[in-house]
Amino acid sequence: MNETATLWWDTRNQSIHYIEQTLLPNEYAIIECRSIERLATAIRRLEIRGAPALGVAGAYGVALAAVLADKNDMPSFMASVQRDAGILRSTRPTAINLAWGIDRVIASMQPAQGCRDACSRAVAEALEIAREDTACCHAIGKNGAALLPDTCTILTHCNAGALACSSWGTALGVIRSAVENGKNVKVISCETRPLLQGARLTTWELVRDGIDVTTITDSTAAYLMQKGAIDAVVVGADRITRDAVFNKIGTYMHAVCAHHHKIPFYVAAPYSTFDAKNSASDVIVEERNRDEVTVMGSRTYVPEGAHVKNYAFDATPMELVTAIITETEVLRPPVDIPKLLSHRSTT
Ligand code: MRU
Image (cartoon, rainbow, N blue to C red; front, top):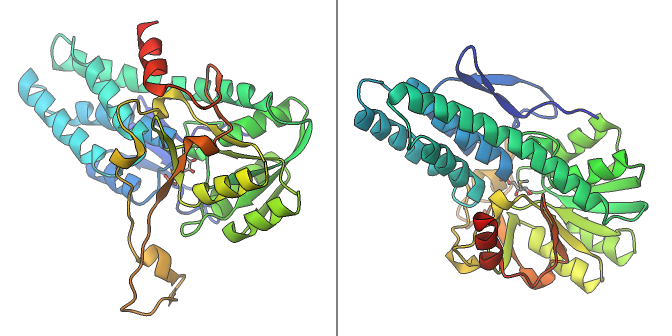
């Protein structure tokens, strides 16, 4: 199976490299990024996307900010890093990993003895976050693979694959690990309107790995469930609060249908995606540009003057979730998430 990184730090050039995801599947291009403005644009445009990958991008972004900042005195160095961190943090509000990666690298700089030491610490922490993310994906894959039947058809939504992480993937990590363990897994990949991360990215990843994949329109999912053609749903997450799972718009619809048809609904995500402080009603759901909905190719399909709603994410209530597959365990709701996280931070 292909295990190339989605984004990485170039130690020699002190820059970020990433696969430009808006071009896939037609073009495979690697971009080198050496400015915070360019990185912020890449995140806003979804050249880099997916919650764990955003965590790594935020971490590398702070490392880059530290590399670029004047190193004359510590207060102005840290003010410059914080300013750049603020620019990156504001790019996308829903996936919690972005802020998590940024905050973790900034915290790693606190004990530094001077600017150069702070910069080295930032780079080291960002590299560690990327390394941990890959390890988490493999552990999630192993934990999740055990839940799947030996022969099964899995529906997934959006892209929670290698491209959404530093590599391997969360939901696709489960599928990859199951295939590696000899299970016969077929995948139904929902196209994921409006930006088609499922059709373009998930399907591309699975074809590349030789895993059996069928792409459907999002609205076909319920019909396939009704026909008994889906054994389980496995999706990723952008944020998990105590009461809901935030994931790509359309996920809630699949969860409701899965519940109705008594099909297990699994969420695969690392602990960096958990948000113990907030409940669903506190979370800002990103709303994106109307053109993503109204324009396809060079044609506009919605008359001017019509209102358009383009929410990027929805919230699936915890009672519809069969299990959350993490890097250390499989959680079966109801789970006391704040208690679980405070226990993790003290052990
Ligand atoms: O807007 P995106 O492409 O960044 O959204 C990503 C998702 O919502 C994915 O579904 C994914 O499950 C979360 S990241 C593993």
